[in-house]
Image 1 (tube, rainbow, N blue to C red):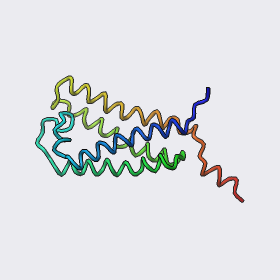
Image 2: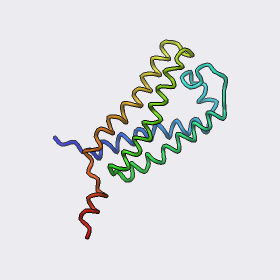
Image 3: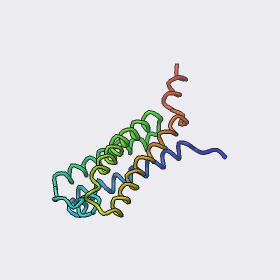
Image 4: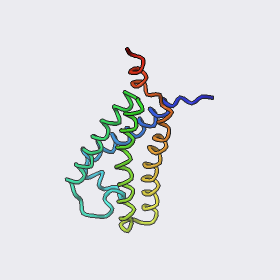
Length: 143
């Protein structure tokens, strides 16, 4: 049975896009409610500016993810996944250093969620060599 790599990659990127859109809109439109989540606020003082910047950044990343969903070429998918991974890996490392603000259950749940946010795009990135890059194929056949 053959796996449609383009469909798998597109579906994975749609999932990452959906999470970024939800998180970005929530943080940008309802920053205090987003900050109230123990994993986010981590029992620190509220910072509206930080929440608004985080929401805007999440929405900005969504633009690259949308492009990768619409134009699913190897090059663009790699850029989108690479951009996502830069944030996801840094986010995981940052929160791993700040676990003392959380209960053990909260910290474990957070680390699982943030590690998953690294694993999913990494697995998708591994699949990108199997994606035929239609743009390159077209360029080679044109006179």
